[in-house]
Length: 111
Ligand SMILES: [Zn+2]
Figure 1 (cartoon, rainbow, N blue to C red):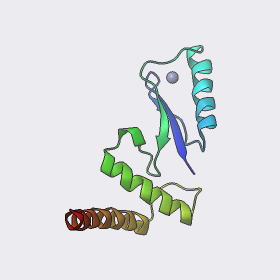
Figure 2 (cartoon, rainbow, N blue to C red; figure 1 turned 90 degrees about the horizontal axis):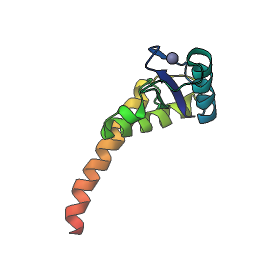
Figure 3 (cartoon, protein in one colour; figure 1 turned 60 degrees about the horizontal axis):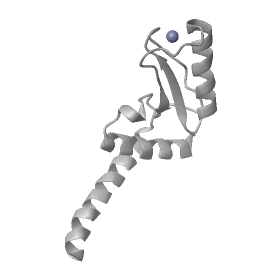
């Protein structure tokens, strides 16, 4: 399940988590229509978030990879909630480390 949020930088408010891109568009449009007469607030933000509520677009690449893996593992256990169980975060870190280790071992062996 993908999670999204809309952020209005004029009102300094963030929408509750919405479960799909269509619901995100509705949340942003409702906010603009009711509070800003349909105008688009400068620098508004709308996008996908991880299970910790962080914007994927604002995360460094390695952190985003860890978030994607931990989100996927956490969704296997419980797709309706937020947050990561400790084991999902640990397995995601292990997978990244194992991938890096394999890369460093296999690339010199092939060359
Ligand atoms: Zn607003």
